[in-house]
Length: 91
Image (cartoon, rainbow, N blue to C red; front, side):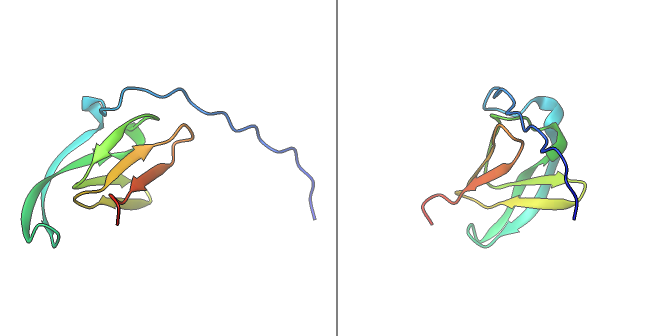
């Protein structure tokens, strides 16, 4: 076993709700079964989203180790610790 000091986790201040222009990675045509068609979907660089940003679906958030899919009628929000929380829109 090992003993170590616990790191202090600090909440970051929240920014504006809309992601900065630098967070945009463009758009991509994505088929959404909820819409029954392809939709030109915004794509975001996850590392450039900051606490307080809100990303309405449909959207794609790409980070180095995964891709986060925000379906139509859902909303993603970056919390003060950098986590992506998705509101399923009452589902």
